Amino acid sequence: MRVLIILTSAGTTADGKAKTGFSFAAFAEVYYALADAGVEVALASPQGGAPPHEPTRGDDPPALIRFKRDREARSVLMDTLRLDQIEPDDFDAAIYPGGSGTMLDLPGDAHSKAILQALGRNGKPVGVIGDGVSALFSGPLVTSPDASGAAFVADHIRKLIAAADTAL
Image (cartoon, rainbow, N blue to C red; front, side, top):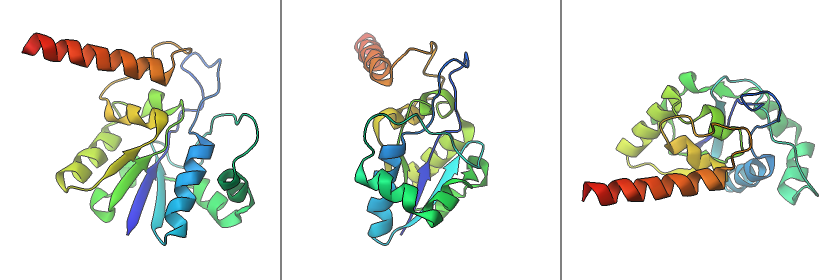
């Protein structure tokens, strides 16, 4: 089994005032859950290379401590594939582990969308964690640097419900 983990390439908010990136803790948990189960894991991001991660707060969870000590895993993370290099048929599933940066570059990303569509057509699962849900939307999600993913998703859900009510 081969799973693609898709990370963000967005390292700062649009105004450049705040650091963003992927959730390192969520990523490490998923990475080791898969790797320890014998799953082949590939990493990709819109720009490829080393993806930025959000600043960590508090104590590192065990999976993150393990990752920081794992030279091979760190090497793979520093050289992610570009999304335009991905052939979706080569994967059995994809996971978007989230982080605030995912709300900036993954919504509306044509290559991410193509991967999602191909996996969906073939009945293959896609997992999202936290802000990773933003990859499922087709346009920019964050219009202000202080917008939270939870507030955005809640607002979108209310709008979708309202649109469905209007359509009925």
